[in-house]
Image (tube, rainbow, N blue to C red; front, side, top):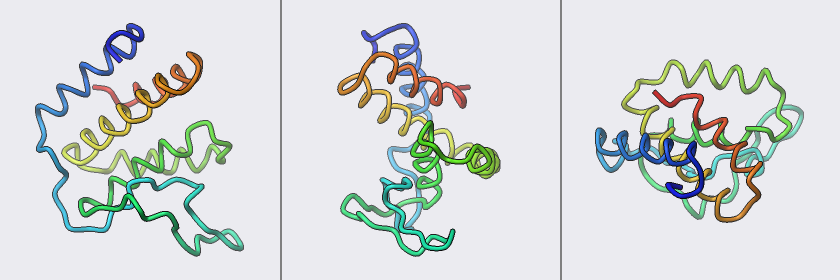
Length: 134
């Protein structure tokens, strides 16, 4: 990320700073899916009926999955109202949960895009990641 471009390098510095300010793991004993996105949700009649693909699940703070979901709907055809609603939910999370979870997902998605996708797709993920960099 440091060598990709100025934006990704700045994001990497922010992620490192957040990591230095927070414990290695989010506290909690909740079941956390870790890959909570629309492709892993089963739905019928407008209601979620199940969640699949639990092979990466862990224990931690369940609110991490809300951040994962926000990244999962970014540019994926979700109704804009869904993103606005989820952003409002995230705005209400305590900083000691939101900041490290956002840093984790920002690093995860931007790094993945750099390694596997085109520069415009990297910019797509940087656009989302930078929304909560502070």
